[in-house]
Length: 457
Image (tube, rainbow, N blue to C red; front, side, top):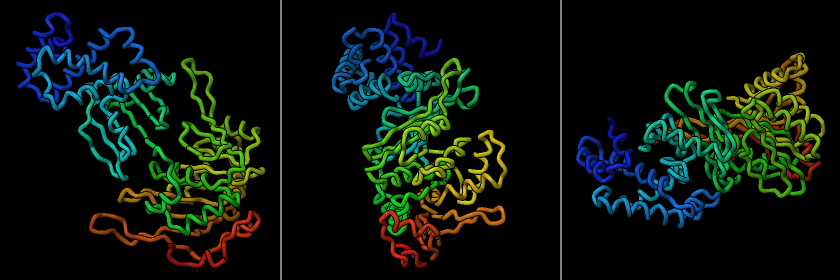
């Protein structure tokens, strides 16, 4: 009979705790702490009054009331054997039990840590985080697979979602806007895997991006002018390159007087304007019915009298609908796509249009792309973990069945310093965009010498 099984019995409780204490030398102190935490958690579930249950299960718990209830159980439990938990860890014990019962368990503290941008749980005993673009292995662990699955169920239940062997992967969104991806066996051979992409509580401004070294002031001025002049922009980049953050910043340049419709798989954009309609795709229900795709929402958005349409990311056939919207009076629209270079972004768009199910000639697709997309902003996460706008590229026109482009700005890396930090600079190529005359039509003052070649400022 295992130690945990013996400890799970209600009869002879004090005796069994002392058996554990006698065997503690075979386990680490952390193992002892985890078992005590599990037992107190179970006792709360078994013994809590109706009044306590109402406090612990309401949608908006008062943290002080919750802590007071749990602290009472902890104190009563420890009174039975004062040597079970060191005094210095008793406050932590209350906090950890509260996290297990109401929060995200062992990863709750990581979720609250503003320096953490991504949490990656690879099975119950391996948790990584991303800080400042770098991956770190943490000391955080779940008790076992059942504990991890319990936390996963807590995340999904309020969202009306489920996960099991018949539906072993889920994309969802936490109440604070964090994006969650979950995949479990049999698809994941390492056990349940949970990935949480966090977003800043306060949306980043363009000044933040300049201070982070993502772009320079000249590029920011140009992008502000492009958004105000209703230039159609595609933000391209790899996973974790900061596309959504940059799209959020670009959207902040849209005038307050315009009606904006945003369309996303999981709502991540946080626009500051007043007149914003946020649409979110919906997966199929348990019976496999009721799915609403990004493509459905793009088509519907066209009937909502939008001044601007912002699609969080195009991945499939909705690319065709987005291009048609851009070509039919919805100038100034914004979207993102996964690609490593501006040229790759054009190829990806072409492939996505083919996924729409319409058998269009390749030349017709390329003409649609070249007339709809004005500018590609390429963002990359470079080796030191920082995010950079590596290219701002104009999409020009068709020439011999090829879409022509020209780089307007680029990031030039010249090396790395002794700490592994990238050394480089942003530079203008000296080329003026063909849509330059459009700036004046929208009252945007951008002098012609703005585009002179040289390092940015």
